[in-house]
Image (cartoon, rainbow, N blue to C red; front, side, top):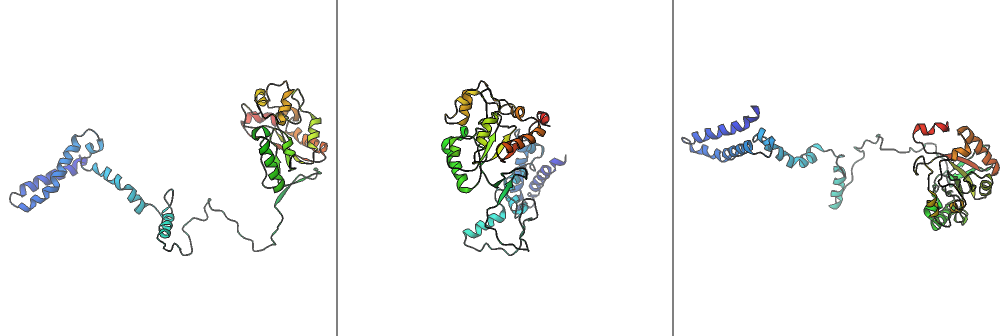
Amino acid sequence: MIRYLPFIAVVTGAVACAITAIWFAPVAWALIILLPLTALGVYDLWQPAHSIRRIYPLVGQLRWAIEEIRPQIHQYLVEGELDGRPFSRDQRSVVYQRAKNASDVKPFGTELDVYGDQYEWINHSIRTKPVSHEPFRVDIGGPQCTKPYSASILNISAMSFGSLGEKAIAALNLGAKRGNFAHDTGEGSISQYHRLHGGDLIWEIGSGYFGCRNTDGSFSPDKFRENACQDQVKMIEIKLSQGAKPGHGGRAARRQGNRGNRRSPRRSDWANSRIPIIPQRVLNAFGTRQLHRRVAGTFRRQTGGVQALRRTSLGIPRHRQGDA
């Protein structure tokens, strides 16, 4: 019954004003407001479209009125200086001031939480040192590696010849040569375009053994030694698994290889191969994780000390149990 009180009060007021106007005419002016409200309340009670207006006659109309002015209320009464999307009120104020050619300078200090996770900085040292003009590089290879490589912190990641083509590979290697950083060959092995400009190479050996593959699809130590002993090859990357192929990775139909670039080094490996697919077979040649370390040592000895690295993609735990 409480929800009808505003409507009952309006109806009662309208009746009272109408009776009082018989003796005191100025009261009739109140009917200009009360009669439309009474008519609106009666309409709310009988209209079928909105249950809120039917259950709360007159008062239910406030929902739509407040909804109309909600953006203004939020902007001027609720929103802080740093709230708002995509631009905060503080940022909008700077735009307005600059558009009016007014000063947008603020005094020292800030309202931002500069100790929050999104704010990071490096404090300067009170113990200064001379600025080094030598490029920042990382030495890869321990005492057991007779040919350690001083690698740039930024290098060209693995993208194979079959994915890019000869012009892209040659351009990337030229950039590696000029910038003095390394160029990862990708699983497609080393082509003549990788050698064209003499940029440093990281030779990647994946599940297809491209560049060191026998005709039956097995690993070929002799072909490996032939490629790995080139002066341009600075490191060897053994890719144990990958995620960018169907199944557990490394499954590529032979017809896809035949559709590849005719200059691709993997195409020559496909030509005499009787293996219809490339299974995930790197573990077959290199064994378990303990054996990987010995294989890496063997690679270093066969290549005169070139550093060998391992790379894998982490997937479902049960698929990695055999690599324990």
